[in-house]
Length: 476
Figure 1 (cartoon, rainbow, N blue to C red):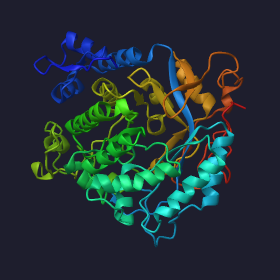
Figure 2 (figure 1 turned 90 degrees about the vertical axis):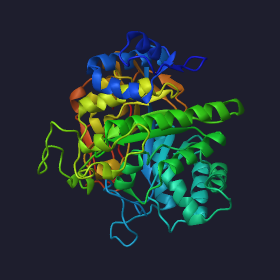
Figure 3 (figure 1 turned 60 degrees about the vertical axis):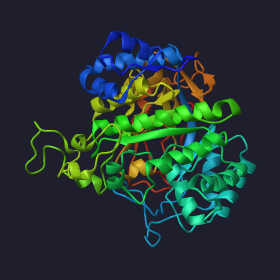
Figure 4 (figure 1 turned 180 degrees about the vertical axis):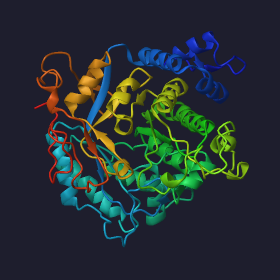
């Protein structure tokens, strides 16, 4: 990002070469209308090339990063009833669970022992867990593993904490702060961007019943930034939303990031460090049973997709604007994914990192994403339960991630939560360089059959679902 703020040029055509060059160099900012135009009018390769130029302007031509962490889902009990989720359970369900401190600490320890630097800890919104349960957990993690960065508790969880714990405060912001401060003092380091989905009310209300609205989600992050904690932002697309809804979502992230930088950056405040988007995974979900656009009775593909008819760039559309809104899906394949990711790199001029979503799209599309604006390959996937409950997700060890980055033309480097490079891999001791037989590294996947204690990557034989985590990260 340049030292001066990029300026809006709303009267310039979105495909004007001068405008696009200025966007690449951080001198101009896209309007929502220009962003929508670019999505629809630019050829995919041209859009990808611009996003790649922007990523190289920010991050250089050499290094692309990944993190070694573990995704720990501490409970699947949840008060929300999101129709895109196959993970949540009610308290009384036979397979409902809340992990014990012993199990949680074992998982943290396994991450620590393979060189992990952080845990990503999220769960369902479980009304039976008091605030002291979380405070004690954080205290035990920090006591036993002080070097582990705790990246935990998404905004919807915080909104339910406010509901469950009834903290002091006259406003939502004050109540959030009353909960967040003791959690931070107990060991919470940063907040992940889970539960972002799509911010537009028409879409969010339909797919995320019982989940907080966009204003509440963004307010949680504002409090975190004020308290000096960094966060991330996410977007799940490729379901009932229109393309305009994706732009609206990005625009809200950008606007609230502007506020964080303006109000808190000089006082050690936090900000959105990264933006990660991924397509909806339909298996085992109620949302996934809705017919695809073009497969329903009376569908006419020459007409506008219902989500596009409802979507507005200011988020004001309502489901009444099209009779089939919410009754048809438009799934996102690799082309739509790459186009959306590339646009996010150009649109979010004030967000440092764009993550490639190989977990849902697969390693090769994730690798291509490094040339479509992404500078980060995300996490060595030691464990994943939420997305894999809704279908197959992919699983890679460190050597494979390093090879993917290197084969894309970059130098792989391990990073921390702050996106600081910890260990660039130049020479023969690099995890991928030590592998002599790549035939042992068959593609592994995590799937719904894995239980919370069984999900994990195999040593190198492509296995998953063993009773103990056997992930190695050195290629052996």
